[in-house]
Image (tube, rainbow, N blue to C red):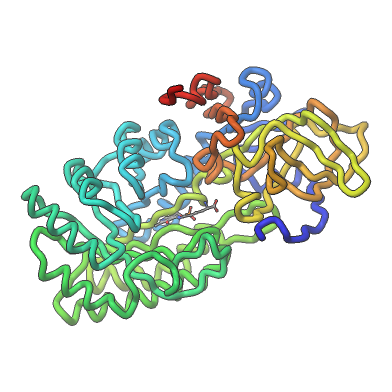
Amino acid sequence: MANSTQHPILTLDPKSFVADLPFIHYQDGTLFIDNVSTKTLSEVYGTPLYVYSKNALLANYQAYVDSFAPLSDVQICYAVKSNSNLAVLATLATAGAGFDIVSVGELFRVLKAGGQASKIVYSGVGKTADDITTALDAGIGCFNVEAISEIELISQVASKLNKVAPIALRINPDVDAKTHPYISTGLKDNKFGISHDQAIQAYQLAKSLPNLDLIGIDCHIGSQLTDIQPFVDALDKMIEIIDQLYRLGINLRHLDLGGGLGVRYVDENPASVQTFANALLPKLLDLQKKYGLGLHLEPGRNISANAGVLLTKVDVLKPTEHKNFAIVDASMSELIRPALYDSVMAIIPAQPHQDTPFTTWNVVGAVCESSDFLGKDRQLALKVGDTLAITGTGAYGFVMASNYNSRPRPAEIMCDDGTHRVVRERESLDDLWRGECI
Ligand code: LLP
């Protein structure tokens, strides 16, 4: 069961905790994000509230560009699923990012935000003929093909449209990413990609079919990886295949290593982007030299997670004999990661008290489910009306929010060096039944 794990009591010193988070700091006893006071934000816009830092997004993206600069042909394709707000996408598009999408909805979000179609890679296991048609009409850069039947389908659709479809085959390298089973994708019993054993056969088939431009090879082994070794193992498996393909006369133009580099939520020690790059660069430079191969990466969480916080207000304090519950105005509807993956996310006060004793609280929402918790056994000094910030919520936060229990979804705010603006309005009650009829 996702919520059955016993957590140790979690004590965080808010000031030293945020010292590791760029563009988040305390000033005169108040938490600031991108130089905007969270007190101002909660007063102006209310809570629960998703707040993003434009400068953190840009810095996190730039870390990839800088770390992989020794390669001459690199495309950082931000994984749209991690945070698809139009302002987030526009920020990254302006900085030069490409995009990794998994649906036609994400395709149109990227185009609406000003992203270039030619820098889009389209991953996903269930592409239909309609999806493929739409993506070909938009002129996307590459399909990451996840099944042998998909190679055939793309060839058929492209032939019918009299177009040539650029494709890479997503190979499942069968390496253990050592992450949560729900977000591990590169083992042979996962549904993703074409199995390692069938790779050569799949390339030969793709080579023989019309209207396909076989440009790449792709893998993505999982998400929130803190260790570099699984990436190196996956790269080695990809190199074996690339070498074999070359001997068969199949020359590719890029290798896509997916996303997945983890972040610090509480006390994890993920490798930095620079360490990640340093571990891969010698082999990647070799591939560039030998085959002229470029690199694509698809980071999501590593760019967006720590560029966002969720602000929530304490509505009720309910001490009981066994547990103390702090009931807040966010819940599993607004942030499902704790309930779904048992993820531990940091919860820190927007304005730490000096005069209130610390108590161990379960921070929970008001949804009618026992799985509705945001943090268990947290040492916090709380009063009713306090604002709390849940950090690391820029990724897989709002995008996974629902209207469960008929709760309108929160507003999203973009901060930029002291300025703030609404980038998605809070949903209204009318929004809850839009499209329904009696
Ligand atoms: N590329 C592909 C093909 C993917 O499937 C994913 C994530 C990414 C890139 C981006 O991975 P990232 O860099 O963000 O780790 N909802 C879960 C995470 C699901 C990830 C799914 N695929 C969570 O909240 O932890």
